Length: 313
Image (cartoon, rainbow, N blue to C red; front, top):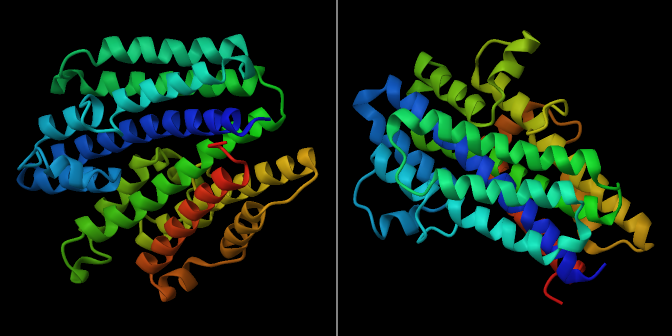
């Protein structure tokens, strides 16, 4: 496969995953802000921080209100990672790789763009926000369903899934880090009811709240939830699940092409770093330090994939 085609697939699904993640993050911020009217600005600030667009946001806004943050993250053309911006970028990449996609996948991506362009044509009112965020998630699910249901399990599929899991791992890691260390006001609050509320917000940010409750194995504590989101391979948004899938997809590409690359070794090391770990050992290492290292290694893996498969070639 041409590197340009592989890159188009990879980035198309990174953008689609990012749009869904932004919607989930806004929903979690909206939910917790409603329950904390006295400190809503801190929650919206953490949403911007987690999204990784603090600098761009602060360049044109002096405060963190719901209306300003939501509009910046959903619609603002000055934000390259707004849902509108990345939805357009995903469609542009889909057009680039049109011949590599089934009709169903192309139509789902195009419909996603048409639907969100119409939906976000004007500022979203607070009463409309839950419905709008739900539509963004549904549109992403439709594209993912078309991919799973109609695409061959070949290199096209593997590059698409790599984009999804690189982006998803980054998102889960950033939410874990920022939500806990930015929102928790003081170390004395660790283990308190406030701490538990923050961790419940983390679960909702990655749509894992009900899954955690289904397991019924642990109380709502920092250690139990961190263990779930980092090490539980049953959860499709956990770091361990994402690392395993990235290693597997790169392994399939190595088999197809008859050649292993540096990115294969990096993915295997990232997976091995999580395998067999306990949450106690991670807390002893320092959760912030562990997550920071994971984000760095995950980003380095993404860049190495681009280099090894010559996306810019």
